[in-house]
Each structure stands twice: as structure tokens, then as C-alpha cells.
Image (cartoon, rainbow, N blue to C red; front, side, top):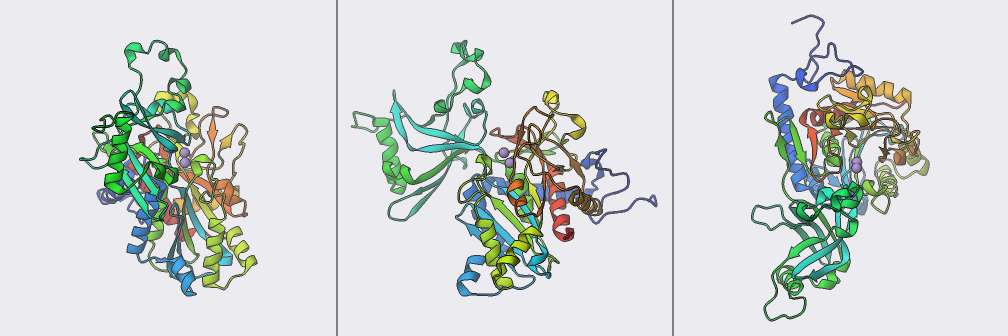
Length: 482
Ligand code: MN
Ligand code: MN
């Protein structure tokens, strides 16, 4: 063994690794580490299959948190209980956000090590008055959610997930289109034979928002004369779950691609799945907190949030006060409430705001600046800033903080790279970083490279997923206040 080479705790050679001249992460894995990587990828795929909506992601997170011995913070609050170093709690906010904490030895005023990511993904939502029939076909009318290329969502099998809340206070949970024996749903495209005019349109006009009408039935109800196909759909809904047409008024139904996450490539090195943005960051963030053993020096937190794709708005978006309120509750249970203490806890925290990066795509190389682009399979990405135009709307991480991050990553044997979202002025995007940065905490955008971001099926590298998990574990353990 060459003397200069150091075996990291992950069993990987550190010598010659330099985030500025990125190397392919795959080159460094030995058999043991490849086994760990693949085992983690399997768990991630199972999480993607279990969580196709923000609600399902929270349900699955609560299940895993309980299994890992985390207590419900709301129970602690109700019972007036106290929390101590080493205690593990979660909080479920409206079934759409989840926060996980491991209480540290140091007082909360010294800040927390926080991992943040979002669990909502671009999709098509069902309208409140959706069901209609035309020429023997029953449809649900829709309104898409987040930034999508609408033409990508037609002519593919689709599934319906969500909840229908009834006036009597009960809720019907819906997930149709995932099991082999389930039916799926479908949005039609124009046949190419008659598409001479359509093919001249720009991509944004090829499929209009109001053309995203979901086919849900085609068989008339016997004996019915008017809208008999719609009547048959309503009868089926009534028979299976007691749902009336009016119940759509208080439903949240999300249309997502039907099917499971799959390995990609002869070498199975990648994963195609729905909602990598941003569950590919949310899952390893959650796993890093759940897997943490013992008592941390500083309190650890993972916050998985909703509504990022539409601006982090609403009661479950990062701009709402739910996170601050939860930290206040935690503070109360650990130290006794103190407004200034909570402010200090937030201000002195360190955060990785994790969201997907645009992976360099050789098919569309022109929109990237290669040496500042996220390369697939080259490790977890850090973005000093996001935004559009001259960094508009971005949270720009402090250089001092990045220096600390560099030390933590290199020490932890993590393969990482820095990246920007494409060439200057080509486009842009935002994350939740600026929302948390307003407390004064140190935040940097971090995440995993994706190809075809916001498409029904997105692509990631298993190596990047694994390096993301290693990155989060190293950060939770070693990030410190300034
Ligand atoms: Mn995202
Ligand atoms: Mn997104």
C-alpha cells in the first residue's frame, strides 16, 4: 500500500481527490463500499415507491422514525414532558412536512446542524370540480403544479394519489395505478398523422394547460341516458369508497407517473424515478438523522418541507412559521421557553439546504459551463448561490462557511463538487435556502445532480446519492458554530 494513501472511514482512497478537478466517484469504491452503496440505493428506491406525494413521504417518514425510536414531539408537548441530550423526536406538520431532531449535548443557543430538503414534486393536480364526459369518455379536469413541460405528461400511464375528505370528518386515501393489477389513467396527445399544425408550435404551446384532461372511464352505466359514462364512474366511486361527486370539492388528488423506480444501464449505475426532485435529497437527509448513533454534540435536525415547487408558500411551505414554531417547542421541552434563546438557536445554526442540481447533459451541452456544472457520478454538489440573472433571488453562502464545509467533506472522505445551474443568463431557479438564511444562520445549497429535472421520469446516479448520504452524515457530526 503506497504510504501516502489514507484509507478513509468509508474505505476509500483520499489521496489525489480535489473537488476543483473532480474525479469520477465510482473509481474509488472497493467491493465493500459498492455493497453499501447498492444497499442504500435499494432503500432509496423503496422510499420513492412508497412516497409519490408529500403526504405519502411524510407517512413513510413517520413510520421509519417510529421504527428508529423517535418520539412524537406533539405527545411530549401534550404531556408536558422534558427532553434531554440524546432524545430523538419527530414532528409531523399537517401531514405534509416532517422534522426530525436528535437533541445534542450543547445548549440549543449554540445552534443546530440542520438538513433541509423538499418532498413536493412537480405533478398534475385534479381541479375541485373535475368530472365531466365528452363523446363517451369521462375525464378529470386538472391544474398542473410546479414547472413542467406539459408535453411530457401525455401518452404515458398515470397514477392517482391523494385524499378525499368528507363532510363527516372521514378521509378516503387514494393510491390507484401502482400495483400490477391496478388500472392506470391517461392523457391523450394528438396523433402525428394529423399534427401538421401542432408540430409547428413552440414546445410551450404543443400541449396547453387546459388540454391536460385525464381519461378516467369509457363505459356507460346501463339504463342511464345522459352522461352515462360519468354516471358509471360516480357509481364505482360510491360503491368502492362511499365518495359522492361533491366530495371532489374537498379532495387533494395528484396525478403522477405510474410505476416504480428502476435501475438504468447495463451496469445498473443509475436510477430513473418520479420525484428525485427533491426526494433524492430528502431521503438521505432523513436517513442521516435516523441512522445517527449516540448523542450528538450539537442538536441535529432534518426538515422535509412541502410547496417548494410553487415558491415555499402556504401553511406547509418553508416560508410559513411551522419550523420556527417547532424549534420553539423543542426549546421549551429542552431548556424552558425563551424567545431570545430560540432566536439564537436559529441564528447560530448551520444548514445544508439540499435540492437537486442540473446534471451536465452532453445532449444539451450548450446550456452549461462545463467546469462549473454538476457532473453525473462525480459526487454531491454544492451551490454557493442559485437564482437567475445576476444571482437574483439567491441565498449566497458565506465563504467562511464554505471553507468549513470543505474541511468537513474532505475529512469525511466525501466526493463533492461545486456547480451552478447552467450558463450565466441561460435560466435559473430557487430553493428554500433564502428562507432559512433570513434567521442569519449559515446556509449553503447542496444536492444531487439530476438529468431531465421536472420530467415525469428523472435520472440520478447511485454514486451521487451515496455521496450525498455520506455528506449529510459528515455534516451532522462535524459542523460547528463560528
Ligand atoms: Mn427542487
Ligand atoms: Mn424543482
